[in-house]
Length: 74
Image (cartoon, rainbow, N blue to C red):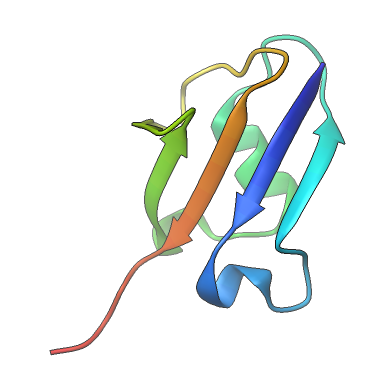
């Protein structure tokens, strides 16, 4: 299945901004995060088709997955 993955802010460094990637059916969001070598503890927001998502959610063909890092500041 094909999933569009969008990375934001610091997650783009050394990776990509947006990419269409192939995954086996029912791949979990957490699997994608680990394959991209993104520490789960650094993930701030996950959006699957513009809706908040969790690491244990499966993906479907044609999905759009957006991964945002934690935001710091004050």
